[in-house]
Image (tube, rainbow, N blue to C red; front, side, top):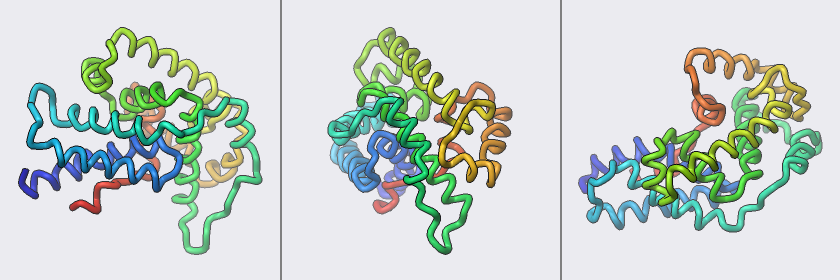
Length: 227
């Protein structure tokens, strides 16, 4: 494949592959390693790619397998643990000198949302990310995971209900009228981040919460080093 075509793949698909790995894996360095391993697998296999599915779906399949492998040792937390952790002021580290306050708040909220997904099993977490953030159709999701779409629908429905019950009470960005006592609440209010979420939610109808978060919170592209 020619260099311009590779650069297009990196710019088009790199941010989403990076988002999958970052939300699957708590340690950012390991997440970066997983994303770059996915890239190596893409390069190694690109000449054998058959266009029976779109190239993005094919790349998601490679990323799915790679992320599952790297996430095997990730911890799974109970909602009780997450609730106590998010409310504990002991876990706040004030922004370093020179760091923009708004960026610091958004980075911390992003870490919280990554943490919330730790209540799911590893496979359910990855399936949910592919559906909610990558917005894959059930047909493409079945191709990527090799799990029947009827099973996928049931698992995602259960996951959505589970997350909704927690987010309703514990996340100001999800439900501004909830009983959120998260340690980041004063900072979120200070920069009006919940208003920004609400404004975009009104513009983009039917967008899922984690997909919305992906639009507004800091993004990474761990493939940029290959351009």
